[in-house]
Length: 497
Image (cartoon, rainbow, N blue to C red; front, side, top):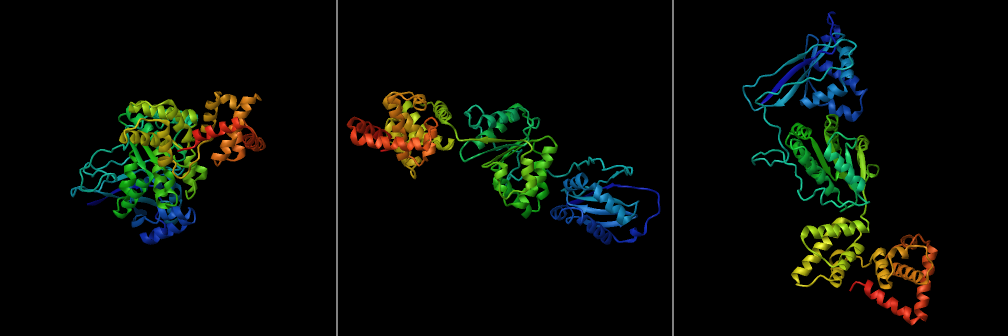
């Protein structure tokens, strides 16, 4: 059943006689207050925090207003107490005061209203002290939005994936800052400057893995802390359900109880104004109480469209760490880590081919390895470079048949038995220049890279040098039989069969 817990906050009080303004009825008095308030707060704030208030009574200079929840009262107390004091004083006189009537859900029929009267502060006080209001022992538990109605309720589950730990997150130049900051947060949640910690980057670069790793590490270091991982879309759907079921207060209170909140893909809040509003209030409560917030996004805060500026500004309070595309060394390390964890061993040339050919994201690299292993197992074939080429063409890059510049350089250097560092150096030795020109030629022929990008991969050459190299290779192939044979053999090695 619904009960009303009443407690009185006296804004100012003296022994003067009641002013004529107090002869108004409670509806007129509150309507007059609202007119003044509306001129002093933003329209959205007025709709959110003042329109839901219902005047109850006006008795002996005490105006009673009903607010939807204790959280609602605390917000008014925190942000608008000075304005409310001035408005009440203006409309009801210097001795006017305000009483909040808080609606709370209760299952006990025997429960009675619990009233706490707060002494008036002196006239120099800027705001009232927070009120600690005891909760009736029979009050029901706040509804957990993760529990399906009708099923047995359980403790809050973290929703963390055990396999996503720091131990199997391969560190590289592309993710060193994000991993280091995540590790710092895991060791001291809410106690570092990285609050909130926003991890951003493209698809498949490890944002979710790192977010789970932070949560898992916190659970290990602080078993008593409540850690919750939730996808932004799940959060939004829960909020919609809460609106439909009139359990918005439970929804807000549930998330406010969390010690560490991890929101994945926060960019999906874009355009959802009410979801952003409720997340804003949850964010503020957690941050002000020293709770840790971890967010992931596919873009930096400055690039997010459809997000409220007040929310974006809070995203920037802590640290925004970028996850970049893994470099060659990191890609090889990822494959080796995956192989070690699976207890398998692949020929070095196959590992290098996968690392050179798949340079988009971690997820695609791991998917390619899994597909290759499945192909070899199902077809009872040994894992060879040929099989790897077929698999990459069919299952990974079926829409683009180009190889990478790095792989072309590796094949050319292996063919001429040269270290790749020599190819990228400024040496003018004939055999090195020839290999460099051939790698430029195949890079232009087999990739969509610009001449400037190809030159950058070959030791910082300009586009004119690349164009000259391509013309030189074509001319030599027409006049030098041995050179033409080099090209034919290299093209076979580079072409995916």
